[in-house]
Image (cartoon, rainbow, N blue to C red; front, side, top):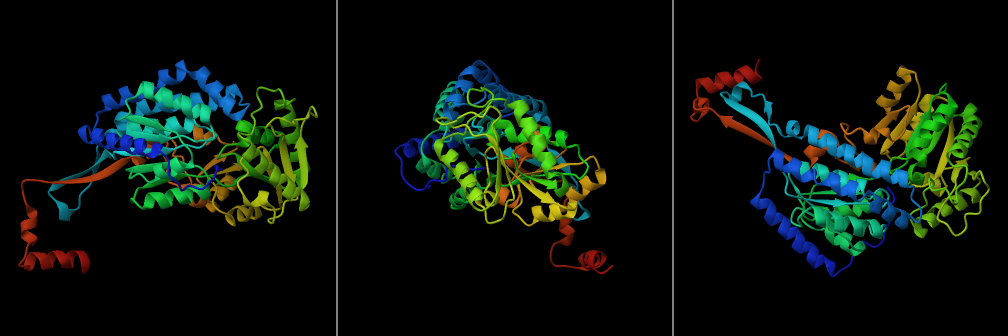
Length: 480
């Protein structure tokens, strides 16, 4: 995920207050280290009215931050997804909290073993600008469900939304339970340097390295949700208009400013023009106009807009074919809106081929055989998501078994993120760890292994001085 990678070092007057909040949460956790299921459910249930009662204000705040953010996208991808995750968590929590029985060997008999999931303490959550509500509140729900206290650092790139969420959280929770921190990059650096019991960061790979380095000073475990160049592979016989429609679900949402948005399409070489035509048709159907279209989201700020324009300039100068889809031929000067654009004839020397795009631009690359497409993906850093379109189950299995990615959608894009029971996370350059589903609960918990010995102490027979019983035991296990 692309983030504003300014210098992460510096001092800020707000850091003292932030450290006081952290200390207060640590103290509060020690006073109540293991809230029961009813307490946790009561706590996270406060989030539902917080979001529903202020949904219009949240929609408007994001619209101001982006200069134009589709209201329905905010409601669906931010609020609705979060509420579904809340409902799922409440339903599953008691099951997640149950101790898990484990078996014991003859050497540990007579005794019992089990695992209990214990709250970690104080969890830090660092939020990006692209989905600031969802990516703050969904991990907040999971961390609270695991019994923790939570501090949230919002992005400075969405000041209206960050300020509003800070106010709403303060009205909903005591500060020693949940606190929102706002501030510039120096505050983010100070936040990452706090000795959290776990730190979740969502953002770019480059900034993620700084976050991990800051956390390492305290041996703070981290979950990194990064991004990368998520590929779409279209099978040889897949209906092309169908592929365009399903790819559009993931690429058009939030104007492509999504960590799991399709970054490039690997298309059968004999069908590239067919895909271009299908994509033009799909985009024109979805967005017959751009400038005053309330469904068309803008680029979040001038810095990101300039970055995306730079990719097009660089690609054009190096020989790429640029296909801009602006159905009404509008002049978009003075806006931060960019038309959906295909880039063909891409070479590895182009910047767009090297960086995560994170916008409404998409490369189209031809391939001859499926193995060629698989090899292309595997030669590059492992992506956060991979999408494959094919009704042939054998081909699907081939792609699944021979590629690495954080998650996969077959015959769709981005939908796997909304399946609450699936883990969500990256691998390699796209991140580490997961925080959705039961895996998320375990991320924010300590899986404490417990062994209880019975009244009969069988181990007295293997204490020194070692004799015939010990020798017989060793021969049985190692010499037979």
